[in-house]
Length: 576
Ligand code: PEP
Ligand code: MG
Image 1 (cartoon, helix red, strand yellow):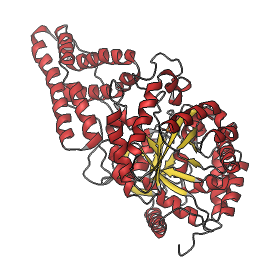
Image 2 (cartoon, rainbow, N blue to C red; image 1 turned 45 degrees about the horizontal axis):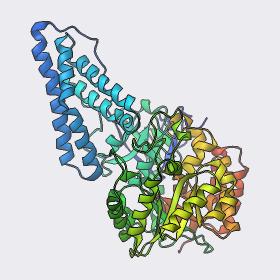
Image 3 (cartoon, rainbow, N blue to C red; image 1 turned 180 degrees about the vertical axis):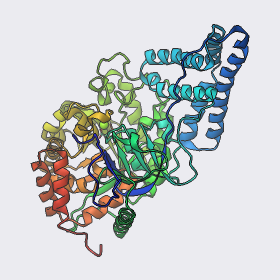
Image 4 (spheres, protein in one colour; image 1 turned 90 degrees about the horizontal axis):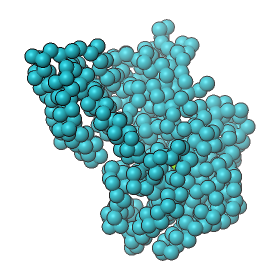
């Protein structure tokens, strides 16, 4: 199976002791350096009964640990900016909650030692958050992190969390939570390796935003000990341990060449024979706006608006939304911005939108379906988008997530137009939508294929489960068939069909997508240069030939390998 890893045979360029660990490559490029592991949570010692005479001191130790953790997080919040600072401040407030300290103290007075008292106090809070469901349940990971920190403090053990060895390193972790990655300093981290996670995991998306090579779902990452030198190849999805100096030099040369290739081309995307392919950026938060706007792109292909609705108990007001959209449209004046309306539910639960008691939230009332339950949400959002679009200079398109049948797209397009917005589209994320794309595309102005969800639903594989990464691989020929269906439907009616899922960020797969008939590709800004260079090195006929090769392959691994081999026949031209 792909996506799981085993120490493979010694690579031709590695030393005798070297092993090649396999996983899912993300972000392209490669980097070598020493491993720095994220410290695991402290192991709990066996419980101990605290004698009555010791209890006041033990209770004070528990309280002090919580206070220390809260103060440490406040200090780190002050030293950072934006989302990172907000995440840390929120965590600090949780740690400073007096109810937590009172509960731990009460447990110590019953004879429990400080570490176990903290563990149990956090456990009680954890259970009530989990029971609340939705957004609150999402905070459980933050609470677990606080428990680990407090327990480590009281036991005098190293703090779990991001390592800081003081030099550039390859960060290795079991998985990375948003709270960890908010603090990650790309100047010091050269690559990421995680044991868990799949191609659409948080780590994968973050690696692309930061422009770092990464290998996720690397089952043998536990073998990577602190200080060990590794070579991480985000294109091949491999981690070579103790690589031979030659291998490192060759990888650095390839990396340099990759950078040179990406730098040789600029401006609108096109194939070697001039077939235009719009290259657009994905945008998921306002703090990403400066980098997104500065990127060489024709606009935003996917503006995820969920960030406005997260971490709150009620929907943002029309004014709040208008301000945020205005900032984005101003930064992209003269370019296109495709705004996706709220995509709540499943991996993005919101307590005021989605029901906490659905048995299968990924198959429940999510995406556009939430607008049926509460039409005001969509109305307010469309009103805010229209107000912000007015006189903004940006070419504003609006699309709905999780469309399943043409009538949904038609109703959505009608609402969009009622707000004076001219261009309405539907995301193709459900196989039914792809299969009936020919009908769907006639109800609106464009389609945008969300390969992350389309893979999840086509393969009945939870997109958040690293262990199912094989099914979520965007090279799966069945997924490509669905993309082809959508692209052909668009071509038949003269309507654009883009791809905005993670598939669009892979320079090799981009050739296949264009060959299937896709007219635009939207990805993290750091990925566009490689995609542009890849297109510039191949004609539209090459792309069509490669698409046929991919569709003909028995599985994702074979498709990738066959296309890599077939594409190598044509090299990028010397001059743009
Ligand atoms: C997708 O599903 O491919 C997509 C782009 O949407 P998201 O990842 O936000 O669900
Ligand atoms: Mg989606």
